[in-house]
Image 1: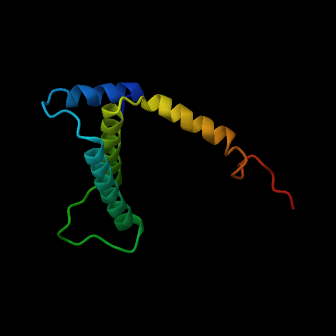
Image 2: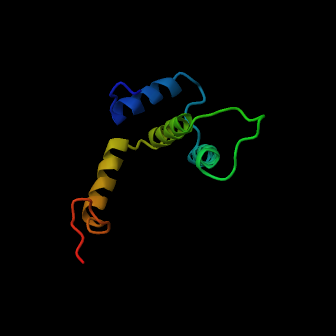
Image 3: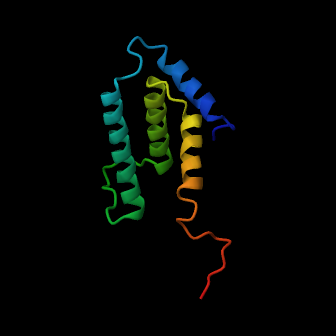
Length: 114
């Protein structure tokens, strides 16, 4: 439900939010710890939904979507704190996948040769 926001707009929205607080962004190490914490929470939810570990009756219901949102928010904070444009980072990675790894996976449109 992003209303078609670009990554640049998401980064600006997070920056506007964080900029209203004196504390500002956390240090890179603290940000990495937060990223790891949020990833752990996502892993726990995925394990509850798809793994062998059901939730306890006392545990609150959290959606994978919410945990992914938390992870995205912290990742954007991390990028912003280091002045990294995530659109540029994405373009760099996609270029890498489309060149270095272009023949690594079997394409859907390839017919199998037997």
